[in-house]
Amino acid sequence: MLKVRQRLGKYRIERRLATGAFANVYQASDLIEGTRVALKIPHPHLVTEEVLRDFRQEVRVTARLDHVNILPLKDASFIDSHFVIVFPLGKRTLAERLRNRISLRTALTFAGQILDAVAHAHHNRIIHCDIKPENFILFDNNHVRLTDFGIAKVSHRTVQGSGWGTLGYVAPEQAMGKPSFRSDVFSLGLVFYRMLSGKLPDWPYEWPPPGFDRVRKRVHPELVDIVRKATEFDSRNRYCDAEQMRNIFRRVKPRALRYNSSEKPRSGGGTAKQDWQSIRRRSFQREHGRALETRYTCHRCKGPVSEAMRFCPWCDARRSVHREGSLLPAQCPRCQRGLKLDWTYCPWCFGAGFEVATARQYSDKRYQSRCSNAACSRKVLMPFMRYCPWCRRKVRRKWKVPGSKHTCSSCGWGVFESFWGYCPWCGKKLSST
Image (cartoon, rainbow, N blue to C red):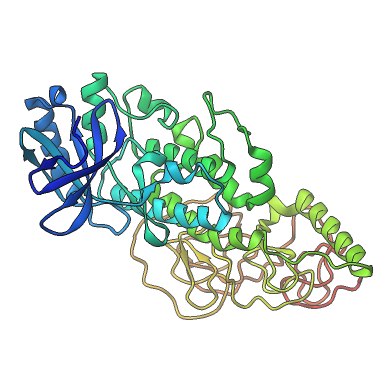
C-alpha cells in the first residue's frame, strides 16, 4: 500500500480513495501536467502474465468507446514495479451521492447519461458486466461517466476464478456464466430503482420491491414500467439492450418531469370541481385507459389522451401535433406521431411519404383491420388510423371505441358520452353534455 506524498514516476500520492479485492485506488497529482488523476493499482500478487494478456485485450476493445459519458483510460503501464492504471479524477461516485437524498429531476438527469453511456457500449457490441453505482463517476455540473470497462471483468476473473459481476446488481443469467446485453439492462434497472426509491431490491427480485410506495407516489407510471421491464427475472422479457431502453426513456422523461408539477386544486368551489374531474378521469383510466392507450396528458387540462386523438375529449384542445413522444420507433416530422420503420406514409396526417430504409415487414398485434384498396401492398391497419400507411388511401371505416356503443353524430367514430364532453376525432361537442 502506497503512502501519502510518495512519488510514483511523475505522480505524487495524495490520498487513498478506495480499497478492493483486486486493487487500491489513489488520488494523485500529475507533476508534469499539473492535474489531479485517479490511479488504480492492482495488488502485485494478482498481476500475472495471464492477467496482463487479458487486460491488454480488454483495453484494445474498450479503446473504441469514445463518448462523453464514458471515462477514458489515460494510461496503463508499469511504474517502479507497480502496474498503474490512470484515469481522470472525478468528484465522487454515484454510490457516494446516493447516501444523500436525490431529487427526481437529478435522478432523471443521471439516468439519461447512464443510458447514453451503456447504449454506446452496446452499439459497439461491448457488454460491461459490472453496472453498479460505484462504477459511475460524477464530475462538475452533474456530469456522469461510466468506468471500469474491461478492468471489472479481468479483476473478477482473477479474484473469483470464474464469472464476474457484483452481488446485488448481477443479473441471474450472468451469475450462471451467461452474460448478455440484457444482463446490463437488468443491472441498469436496479441502479435506477435505487436512485428513485433509496432502496436496492433483494433476491428473488419480486415485484413490487421494497420502497415501491414512495416510487409510485413520485414517479410517472410509464417510468415505473421501464424499471419493471428492465428488472424482469426472465431475460427474454427485458429490453434487448440499453439502446432500446434509452429510446423508451427519452420519450417518457418529459412526462415524468411534468408528473409532479401539475396544477394543484384551488380552494373553495374550484377544489370540488377539480376533485370531481380527477375522480372521473381516474375511473375512465381504470375502465378504458389500457384499451384506448390513453397514456398521455392534455397540455391544457391534463386529462388523459391517446396519441391518435386529434382533440382533447375533456376540454376540446386541438392536438394537430402530438408533442409527448411515442412508443413507436420513429416520428412523423409534421404531426410528431409515431411511425413504424416500414411505413411509407404517416397514417395520422396527410402529406408526402418517407423513404423506407428497410425491406423488413414488421408485424404488430394492433393490426386489426384491412385497407379497402385492393392493390395495397400490406392491407393492414391499426385502430384510429386516418390513412393507410402503405398506399395513403383515406380510411373509410368508422372506428369504434372498445366498450362503448355510442358514436359521434358528426364523424361517426366511437365516443364515450358518459365521460367525454367532445369528440376526440373531430372536436364536435357531444350531445349528452
